[in-house]
Amino acid sequence: MSETGSPDGSPSAEPLERSGKGDTLALLGRIAAGIAIGTLGGAIFYLLHMPLPWTLGSMIFTMVAAVAKAPIRAPLRLRPALVTVIGVMLGSGFSPDLIGHLDDWAISLGFLALYLAIAGLLAVPFYQRFGGFDRVTAFCSGMPGGLMEMVTLGADLGGDERKIILAHAARIVVTICLVSFWFRIVEGQSVGTIMAKTNPLALEDIALLTLCGVIGAVGATRLKLPAATLMGPMLLSALVHITGLTASAPPALLIIIAQVLMGTIMGCRFLGAGSREVAQALALSFGATVMTLGLTLVFAALFAGIMMQTPAQIVLAYAPGGLTEMSLIALAMKAEVAYVASHHIARIVLLIAFAPLILTLLEKRRTNRTAGADQTDAAKGAPGE
Image (tube, rainbow, N blue to C red; front, top):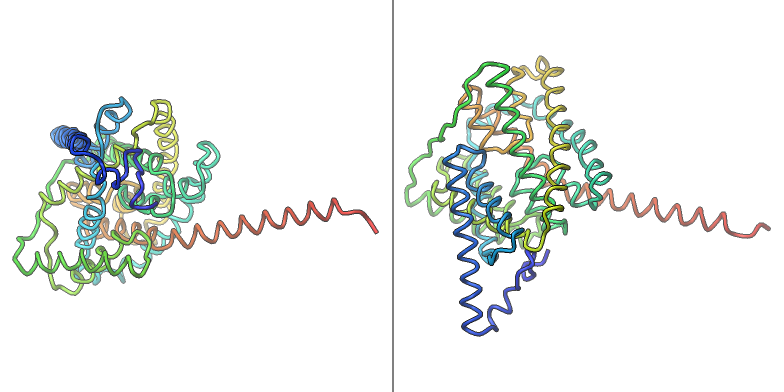
């Protein structure tokens, strides 16, 4: 999707520059109103201890406002910078200790790739058949990657952002609710909300993380990597954390602001959408999420011995929930947080890295199949000699 376009149906950036002062102030007022509604939604979700509160709360509140035709707009020009911050944050989830465990977790990580393949075979055709989604939208909606990561990837590959956003919003909520219910009610374990501690930021840490974001985004864009403003900063951030150059992450307040603004942008994608479209997308997402959660339970039941992990840890590591939420649940349950987090990070990296290749191969296969069918029809219709 072109960055100069208007993915949420709002006026593009160019009319803003050419419009009069009154129009500019009106548009800025709508942007401010959208941010205010998003901030309110994030704060309410946070106070209610909802999953992924700052993103989902801001997104859902602005989504409702957009469907209700409220006079709001998204701060679209901030999107590349916000995605860069999220990429640096994801990269901070890597550490030297994590690399030391990779040998022990090799089998589990290998099964994760198998899990993703089967999940794709289940969820992607489900969205195509029952939702009528195109190939890119179905893939980015059905594959259990991170919410912002899959939306970013889907936008870069030309998918329908509205459908992808709703699919992953519902997936995260359903997953967290069901997993928390299972461990709290069925297993009788305490699943509370814990705020993860962050290391203090020195000036050199701030400079290093900033360089990861800037150089990573610019370099990945020039290399034409998929989801460049996410992938580049994430890879560079992971590198500096693995090598021990820093153990710090972006400040919590900055992450909250990025999540609120990203949620606001996502919610504003629904400007012009009807309630029927929203309800249909939620129903589809619920069905796909239940399927992938069922697959998670199958892997935990069958392969726990081979992976040398408890079924509970496998469920937390493989469940199609958010990285932050599943890590916090693991922390509350005194599970091995590094194991859980590494699998969610690996899943996101695998999907972002291989999705364009997979979609290209599938498209070539479809094109060849169509060409072959046309040739067969032509041969059947040719007069006999």
